Structures are given as structure tokens and as C-alpha cells.
Amino acid sequence: MPPVEGTPIWFELDAADPDAAQSFYEAVADWRVAPSPMPEHGGYRIAEADGAPVAGIRRSMPEAPGLPGWTVYLATRDVDALASRAVDLGGRIRFGPVDIPHVGRFALVSDPQGVVFALMAPANPAESRAFGPVPLGAERTRGHGVWIELATPEPEAALAFYGALFGWEKLGAMPMGDGGEYAFIGRGDLRPGAVMSSAATGAPARWNWYIHVADIDAALATVRASGGTVLQGPDPIPGGSYSANIADPAGHRLGLAGPRHSS
Image (cartoon, rainbow, N blue to C red; front, side, top):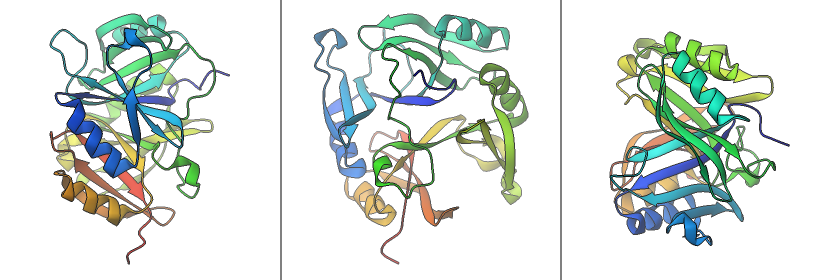
């Protein structure tokens, strides 16, 4: 069965040094990273958690699409139609749509505020296991994406854009004081994440994603020991877990979420 429109189905790191990135994320996220078995993928590396593919690492190339750092892939049944719709709504097509052998069809696009994300129609109709939304009680989500988060200079305009694109609605919000509000997004049973103001919070305008880790304090200690930086947290989140934002040794940002066993 195809994933619901707008479901996060893949996460991809554009890395200048894939070897260093692999070493860092294997330590922090407890991933197993190996080259794709398909030669036509050109050395693309696939990260697995519990035997399920959850993310990819590719070497930065001037001629290749994408921006340095992490890209969030969102599912659609028709990449071409949705990419065209994104343009109609004020966005841009950065690359594609093109087919990836044995994987699916994708396009790299940006919203009207310039934030980049990818659209993908997977070749395999089976449900992707890259994303397992919160709550974090189930061990099956460890090492998987569990939350996505958009920091944007214009939250209301972004909510309108993604609402028109995927049918997402604003499902309540949490006040953050001077940081504005943290607006939850979703449609039906899909509740993938939230939108916040980059202008009010000082966060870079981008799509962020959070990996479920077994112990947030242990993971942050590994981040520091592996040459990364803890940018924020750990902070409590609903359900008894904690979240943090980090940068890997190359400066690429992402989030971690998990329980706290040391306190």
C-alpha cells in the first residue's frame, strides 16, 4: 500500500566526506551503514536500523542536485504533478523529476520561502520504515526518524503552502514565548511534525528531522566524543522523552529524541 501523501519516507545526507559521516552516524544513531548493492547508485551508502533502510549518505558533487546537509523526502503518488503544483503555489523545482533505478521517481523542490525538500514516489509500494512517528515507547523506532520540523521565516505562509500541497492542517500549537508558537501539522492519522518561526527562534530556515536514540544523554556524549556539537538540549518533550539538536563534525544539523536514563 502506498504511503500517505506527505509521509516522510527517506532522509539523505549530502556529505563532502562520506567516510567521516558514516563513522559519526554509526556511533551516534547506532546505524549499520553499507554501500548500496546496486552499482548504478554510484557508491551511495544506505543506513539501516534493525535491518530496515532509514537514510542515505552520498558524496557532495558540484553537478549533483541537493544542498550540503540533510534532505527530508516526502511521499507522493505523482511526483510530476505535485512538483508542478509546488511551482503553482510559489515554490521552485530545483532538480528533476527523474527516476532512480530500483528506487522510484523524485524531484528536489523548494517552498516559497526557499526551504528545500524532496518529493518521492517509491518504486516499491510497500510502506517505508524510515519514519516511525512518536510516541517513542516502541523499540522498533530506534534509529528511525520520528519527527520532522520546519523552521521558516513565514510560518503562516508555509502552513498554507504545505496545506495546499499535502492537505496538512494545523493541529494545535504550543507557545514558545518570544519564539512564537510551535504549530503541529498533519492530516488524519499522519502527524509528522511541526512548524516554527526561524525569525523568532534564530534557527536556520530548513527542514529538520529527529532520530530516536536509546538514551539521549549517552547519545549526546557520543556526539561530543565524535567531534560533533550539541546545539540545544536535552529538553523534555511530551511522553516523558527528551529532544536535542546537534551538528555533526561537518556542521550538518539534525535532531535526536529519546529517554533519559542517567537522571
